[in-house]
Image 1: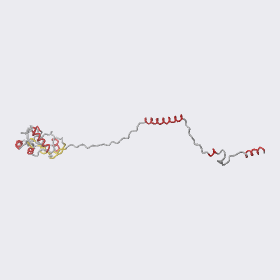
Image 2: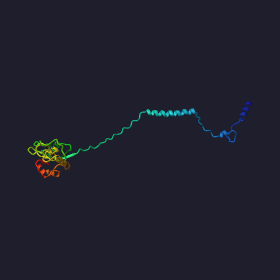
Image 3: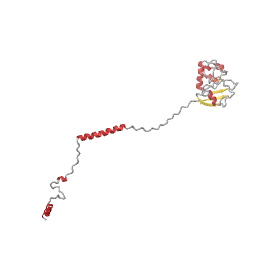
Image 4: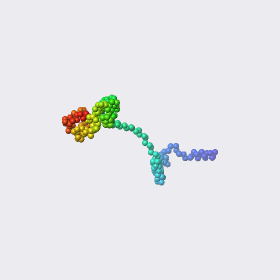
Amino acid sequence: MGISKTLWEILDHQRRQPAIVDSRDPGATDHFAPPRPLRWKVGVSAALVLIAGVVVVVVGGSFVRSLAPAPEPLPVAEVATTTDSVAEEVVVVHVVGAVADPGVVSLPASSRVQDALLLAGGALEEAELAGVNLARIVFDGEQIVVPRKGEPVVSASPGAPGPISLSRADQATLETLPRIGPATAERIIAWREEHGPFQSVEDLLAISGIGPATLEGLADRVVP
């Protein structure tokens, strides 16, 4: 009993902390003080190491990206560009005489008389092609006459039989005519280039240097 009583007296008389702390109690100042903020204390060496690590990461990332192959550009659809071809100049000529289908035909300006005859159906068996220069280049508005055998041959070249065509003869051929020199022959060619083929022999009177006397001497030697 003595020992038990003594223990209970010790426990009963032990100083206990009050359940409610009064700020006026001594030693209670630290209890009501606001908690101190947590402060990071980093040394200078640690900061330098951290900065160096960041720099290494940034530089390393840039280096790795530089080694990576550049992305290939997406293919761009090619737009087909088409340009209208310049149409070749077309001339119109009148093919008459011994051809299968006489009439007006259209053909490129660089075509020959032979091409015009083909478009007119070709020459007939009775055609006389001796006085027709098949290799001559045609010009717009002319009339190509294909004579039949026994008919007069209209010549466009010197030395060939028959009258000379004022609309087709070259300068050398025109100079073979009486009273037609180089200057007059040039004026004849210039006139037909400006006005088109001759419609009649009398059109020569519109050319300087050709008067009625010259025209009379050419009457049986030339045709339009």
